[in-house]
Image (cartoon, rainbow, N blue to C red; front, side, top):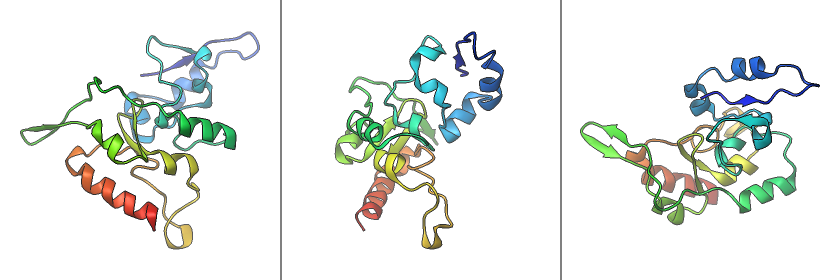
Amino acid sequence: MIYKKKKTEDEGDVTDEISNTIQDEHEVEVCCTVLPELLNPENVTNEKLPTKNDIGLYVKHSHITDLELYDIFQNIWTPSSSSNFEPQIIGNKKRTFQISWLQRFNWLAYSEVCKGTLCKVCVLFLCKSGAGKGSHEQPKTLVSLPFKNWKSALESFEKHSKKNIS
């Protein structure tokens, strides 16, 4: 999936720059980093655009004002109850994201862009410079990488909830 920015007279051709940055759909899923140009739907040509307030668009964000962060947080995109989620096959069992998890864990958000879940509080407000003692660890699952292991979802979400409280 490659999104292309419309060419304007002043800019020249930016398509090559975007294509070189996002080389394939897997790369977008792994890091969920979307170029700032793509946040403005007027600049994108594709029949299915990501929703503006999809939490996956803001992983590794920069240059967003506090007011914009608050607006995104208050109006985060959520899938409808009739949404079909991509199943994860483990052994002979199919597991999918459960919409009820969004109600149970109010910090949780599903990203259509990343096809996984993220902690909206951590994505939008956590200091990205590091975590852990001495800030030497980079925050990963649920923060900079989407969570997709539906088999251990409840256990992982409970664990993340406890980390946020303490």
